[in-house]
Length: 320
Image (cartoon, rainbow, N blue to C red; front, side, top):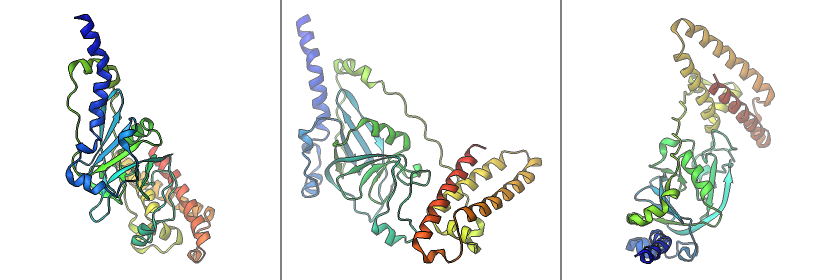
């Protein structure tokens, strides 16, 4: 009896691994998924590659992470908005980027000419703090500065994750990790037998993910409708700059609302004076002036300088 129990115990890792591998087996895909992946895949043979593996289900809007020796993990994702082509099939993680710079594609800039050539790391960066570039052109798994969009059809084709989730995924997968995108539900492994649960209980003790803080409130500048000063006009017309400015305004408004009524007017006046000093100081520092749009290099340098200044102002507002 003891020899039989020992024999079964040594079979556990193999059985557990076989269950996990079934999740990404082509047999686990629906018929239309198998047909769609033909020609859409990058040629990566996921069946011959060891875990970890990533499976993304468009129907579920979830990303499943398969790791050897531990239960699968599942995370919500945002997928491409209606009308945007979403890749299907097999690919892999080509590159991992921490604090990535966002470079809008040519199509995105044609659709929205106000988009900058690039957005550096920071709170206005749509990629968040981590990005996993995949084998498809301009497609990545990344974080977001709009956590409310996760779980919806909201992206330009990439797969957005909550900040805490992408941080966990970034640490868990190496470059070369196979990725499969399916249109239907992903095949979920059946419940493990009791002996397998006992064998993997230590690995399954995953610390709870940190709560995602609510998105910062954005309060648009009411002067944008009639802005004529070069600095305010640039802030109002550049989406990333307007977002930074709006978030700082939102935090200022939240700060004022928390004050006793008798102190609110004085604090509001102080903030107004502070904003005027900021505008004067940054106009000079970033060399913002009329007609600078005629020189693309000067305009780009002014935008970058202004972005840094607004980011610093936002961080200061957070510390109030």
